[in-house]
Image (cartoon, rainbow, N blue to C red; front, side, top):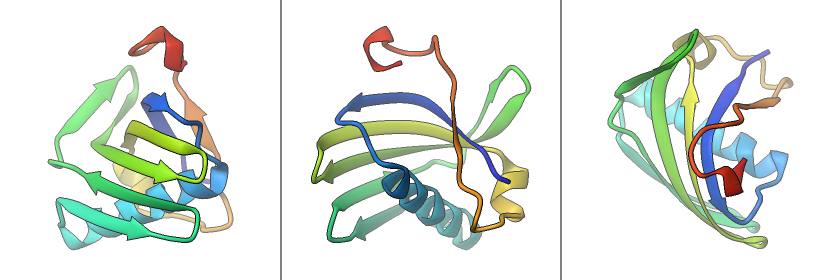
Length: 109
């Protein structure tokens, strides 16, 4: 099972499927060494970026990704960490997101 640590979400709430799409797109960016991606589906359009800088939050460490999302639920900005080990070994049937509360703007936690 992999875990994604959401640092901050501003705007519309995203569904698990939308979050999963962000994760899989970020994983491909990581594997291919790309700094940005543009993802379009029937439900959303997202621009994902990373500088591949590692952030550490307690025992969690990994590259930080940011996404600007325009979805059927509205617009959102998402910042999240994916651990290196989760980027390398993933079971696509497992997709829980772990929310880290108390970070960023309290309105978004």
